[in-house]
Image (tube, rainbow, N blue to C red; front, top):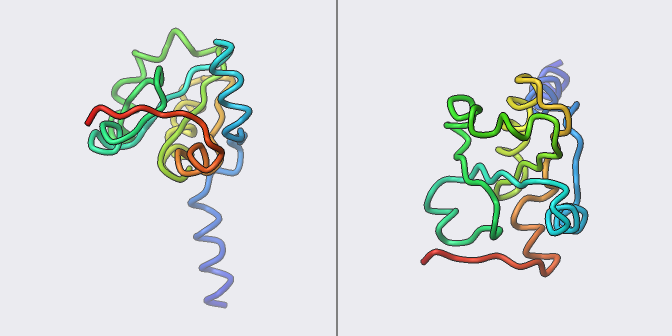
Length: 123
């Protein structure tokens, strides 16, 4: 019984209604200006490495800064973090606010790097 309860708790932590997008799909849409990328990592992570042109809003600030994203409410918005967990939470917040095309970057910036896609640093 404990294992079943634990499994339900774990499933409940992961938003299942958020569509995923691979790094290569995201890079193509972003480079063609058909999507924006929102990086929800902390400031130090952003400074060390980020996708050039992405919008930086740390996860803890997403809800209070939704106004900055309102213009993209009907656009494709790709949420990104280190591995995909924080960005999934942020994607849920955007969906709840009425954003219609929200995606979570599968594997986050780790997968972006692994696929050989470019980033920049502010260090």
